[in-house]
Length: 134
Image (tube, rainbow, N blue to C red; front, side, top):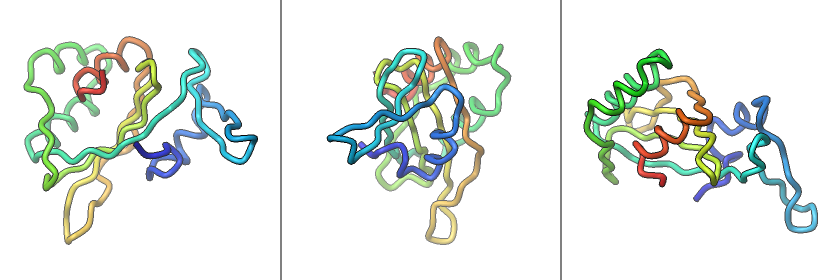
């Protein structure tokens, strides 16, 4: 796990209206929490295949009312340590908040290829399930 603040999208997540800070370790550390449920946020990076990068990009660009159909009609996201795509994921421990940002491997670097997509409540639970964060 990675602290959400250390992900490239960390600053954007920290300033989201439903995210707050909580002091930890005698005030020497700060943890991010999802305020509506008071759940801690965790972060991770996952490397994915080219097909999964394309599929995830379609889901992230979709209108909210089509999210169910896109998730139900597709294959699961495939992970690959040598994948040409990377997704940064920030999620609450209760899975009521999920934020994603995609990166594509180009020129020996992972370059950002999407804006941060934020999901809350039922949509966040569906995205967490798709990504295997259950």
